[in-house]
Image (cartoon, rainbow, N blue to C red; front, side):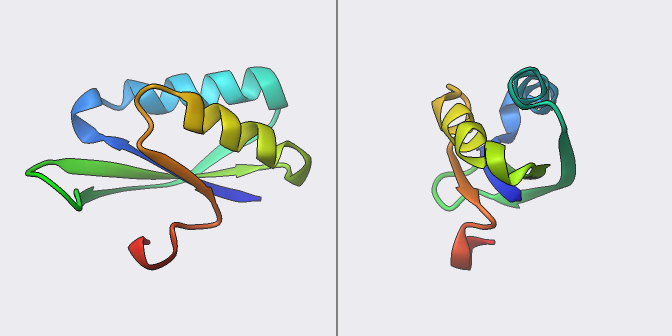
Length: 84
């Protein structure tokens, strides 16, 4: 299943490696399949949108883990709808 999450770009790319590591520890196979920087909806900053591929059975756990991460702005299954 495809998941997407966003975080502020100023936090650095280390966020992505940390998140993938945590998810692999919990779920096994996790693959980052996309990354895009966009202007934030509010303020004068840039957000990073990362796409991950996880097993369907681990999707809920992955989403909960992403949403609980202190740097993650938002996480969703498939996409953020009109924002993506």
